[in-house]
Image 1 (cartoon, rainbow, N blue to C red):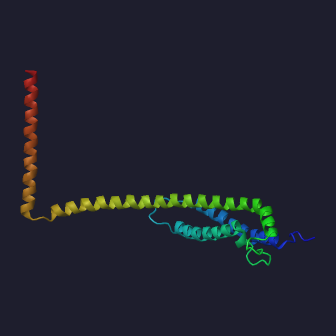
Image 2 (image 1 turned 45 degrees about the vertical axis):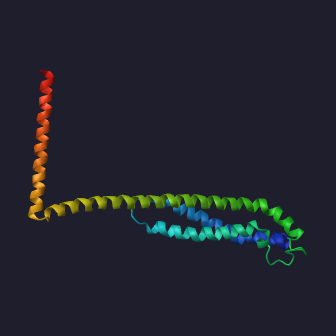
Image 3 (image 1 turned 90 degrees about the vertical axis):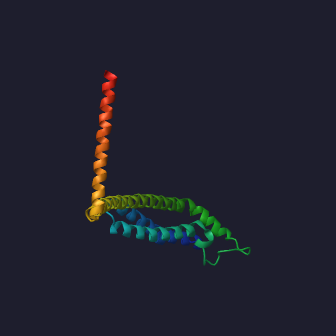
Amino acid sequence: MDPVPESPAARRILITVKDELFPILNKLRDLLVRVQKCRIGYQLYSPELRALDVEYSIVSGEFFVLHKKMSTPDLLFEGLSETTDASSHPAPQLVFEYNRFQFAFSKLLDEGVSYTEIIDRTLDRKTQSLNNNRTFSLAVIAIFVSFAGNWLFVSETSPEIRELIQQMQVQNANIESILQEMRTQRLLEQKG
């Protein structure tokens, strides 16, 4: 006795699940495990994460093409001799077989969608971590360049400008001492 049903529609569904859906779900599961294992320390670029992201784009694209095929009876049964009746609607036998197996393969499709959601969120989170590392590094570099630029400006300025800067520093010190004397006098006046 042949374990595959005699109906061409049922055979098409089971073969599609066996030859296309199961392998793509296995790819998604494997990718999910590898994405979860990928650790990002303080890095500015991760070739491993980039490779996983590229692979995810390919595998998720393949999955959603298959999802569309399995969710659309016309695409799933394309090429079968009894595909449509005279009004170009799926033949009753095809609709019956599709409805009979739909519950089983729709659970598998939902599983695949949940894998893609988890992978997508995890890759986004890890990519955001890399972007934060880059932003922090650029901020540190900008601060360093700013300090270095100020030091170079002061050290390479003309003697006139250096003298002017020194005079301004002396004036600031004088103003500070005058303010301190005024505060002291006010305190003495308040006590006396």
